[in-house]
Image (cartoon, rainbow, N blue to C red; front, side, top):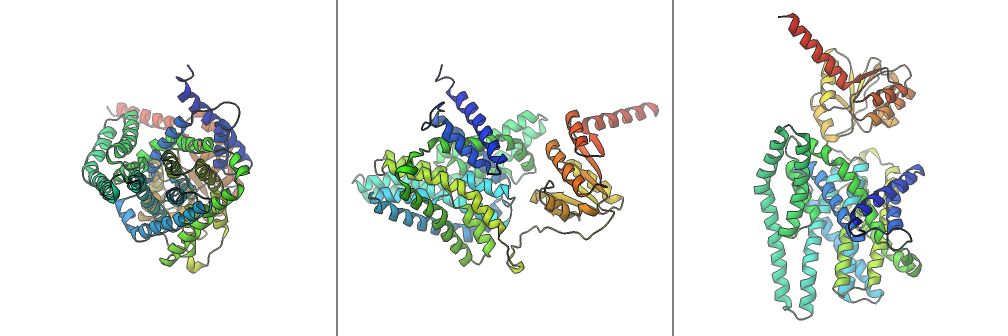
Length: 547
């Protein structure tokens, strides 16, 4: 019975403890990631009490990586990827080389073999997909130039690690006299052909098939079937890419998302996978915590410190120098370098491979895990430090979308959200000749609104600075058109605090949300289903009276 319920136990206990410790971390104003990692340590094999299945947790975490990279791919395009190739390709290769060299030096000092030190160095050179993407998403910069560079850099690192994982066994075999250099060369050519075959398949065959499948399920009218098709494509392509072409799950999912991102259904696909992405991303951090043995901090403090220094400072300085030498400003260089100052899933795989092949000691794997834990914990702190720096005006990055501070106008109407409802509301407000300011947190939607001639402030409407930037102090009306009731309540409360005379109109989907918004100060609340029903009844009555 214990074996049969290990999957359920791992998911339930992992998510449950992550919620409790994550909520405590949030309460203490610490990054929830720290709570998730600590939750993993608590349910891991190195602490007393319940012990979750580490192998299952790692597989569940891999699903999180797949869904996360699929979601990033939905907001990317081949054009975006190629636009940063001149910095991402050489930058990633040079940074991997520098970090690997530092790791090799540390490994040799600790008395390991050259091959073991090389694998150790490679493990310290590659950033975690989950940590990097979550950091960019938390700051809403995935679709900016620096975000595209970071993601492109990550894709190059993933490709390099795919080569590395497949070539290391062949390389060790050639050193042992099994097949020699000819066997190693043959393996390298085979790996290159597999990756080339994957790229050709995705850009030619999958580019035709996947959008057709998505459109067919969308036109079926079944939301459940559409959601299932999105998950089937994301997971199926990732699994097929790994099994058939030997590329990583993350890389396969990214390309699948990038292909679907060219369709009109990309935003809906992203929304349908968001809850699962968040849940499995949490399981990733829990699984990392489960691998960590806290005793390494006591037994090897200097080695741990040196490992963390290479990851956090060595990689950061290398990436910063590369980006600056490529002509980018300080803000862009720091953002990219800090986002890469951590390690994760590929590092664990490389460490496991090195130990399994007998070329790297168990202590090296412990150092890698300690380096991963500590660098992941330090990453939000580094980002916070970077965000507090003030940049001269001439050093500000000129992104494709710029935030606009509107001049004061006493009759302005502020609209939050430019989805299906928001677009209709914006049209009606503008037709009445009112001054409209839109707040939108999605760059692609903000660009669409700007193209329509609407003044846009980009950011989270629950933030005071964003509301002030939109001119909430002197606004006449606030229209909340987003479907998320909890977020709408937070916006309503903050807006009421900033402007007590403001008239607030919001949309909701349930009676509970009506009560919540009323409590937070909304003047008029539109229950979507009720409004639709009343409108339909009016039309039906008008049709009957005309007969």
